[in-house]
Image (cartoon, rainbow, N blue to C red; front, top):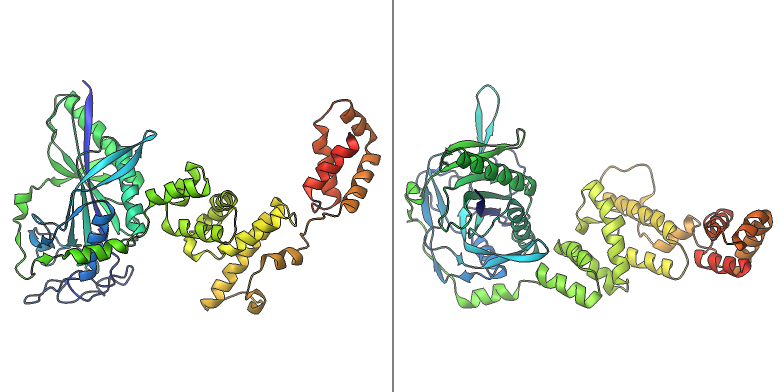
Length: 496
């Protein structure tokens, strides 16, 4: 029997607010355990929550970006359950009246695009974190408790693990573009739960679903779903039944494992949060937020293709991150050829940044440096190989400047020498300027031809591949400084 997979995702994104959802505690990541807490976020008796307006704004911003209907009236509810990382015994969330409903995102799918509908986007507070140690001990860190958490719930429109992964990637890109979430999956600021079921092809009713909990990498999303789908199909084929439950992905073993039976909405005993007034959103506020949203990736990608003549592959990579796209546009605005800028960014620049895990906004080599370098290549001052070494040197010296500004410990050198990195100064310092004097290059070529009469005769007899030999000898004689274009022109002229 052939089966069809049905997947729905619940994406949880911590919002980039400076303080928590209902109190003034910091949301900074990496502080010592339980150092960013107060009576409100740890649920002491008698305290009252105060709503973070910026968090509401960020959810509205997200809803606008994915074409949701923004509710003019919404309210918070208490979601009751007991777990060590939930000190109040309930979570303040939204239930029947969320901030955003509907909407969609488009993902790449087999050379085309697929529209994934959204059910809702709502706002809640995050729970703490359980840390399981040895000797059967567990600890609770409540720093994360109360951090504003946005939940984006998809319709069950996803049919493959790859589509689920692409959906997560697209959501991450959108959230980073509109600057509401940093998308750091390793730190848990973006993670997802997945509801997955299988059904015979042609059947309209959904099968029994299982929930995959807290997946925090694209790779885990795809692998966990792939395993779970195969597990369910095998169980059904063997005459078994799927149990509705919550499961976890065990990355070390490459399997999913049962965690607990799956709760239904009524198990949480939702009721309106009595300590918070309903949220009323005025149309003027929505319009103000909408006006503040910059060009998103899909629109920017189409513009890069039409305005700059870039191939779709280049445009896709350059617009995958807003900061990368802005770096590219700055370089082009300074006079860089779009395709040449793209080639250097996707090759040499990204290689250096990835090696040291540096975001492009902190890149020690600036757009103006790349443009100056490209101009020196275009006017024949240096060739591409020389430019590569200059490129790396600019990057290294830029790091020294950044370190000096950051008052870091430095090796013994005079920082003032590197106060302003100029491409032409490095070219002169290293003696890399190309030789474009035809008489000087011609003298070197004449010497090479005189010393290799046999190769000259073979070339004239039809052995065309020897042109590479002569070019190589000319570059060797000039220590790589001869202008390759002039070398080739003179050799063709002299060899007939």
